[in-house]
Image 1 (cartoon, rainbow, N blue to C red):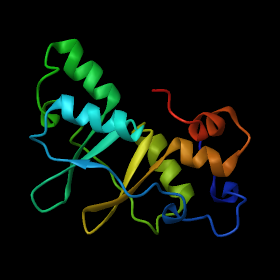
Image 2: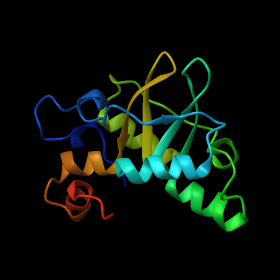
Image 3: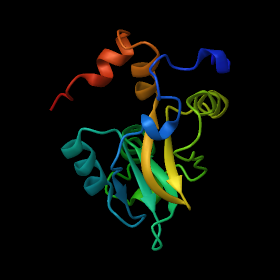
Length: 150
């Protein structure tokens, strides 16, 4: 359950998404192949890539789960990012409060939110980022901080 505004993080100055977002964000084009997108994720140790159009505006998100479920499981592992991407992407700005971002994550049942300015990605904020703020000693925070297994 997402708390109310009184549940803001206890870290001074860390009340806005811009203070906790991960940047730079990794992007791909809709025509990029799934193997290329997956290789980028593996190389960077991340689970998502933001799709951008020819004007560098967000047009989708591809997660490792999208590749596995919408790609490999359906026999399109050599397809394009556009074929498996989530297109109904909700974004936040760097000046969105953490409480509002958490509410939005809960409402939309998403684990990550691209952070955008004028439709262009500037970062990404995840549940793991939020866990680090709210409960730095939690299991989720420890997992988020752990180095990815290769």
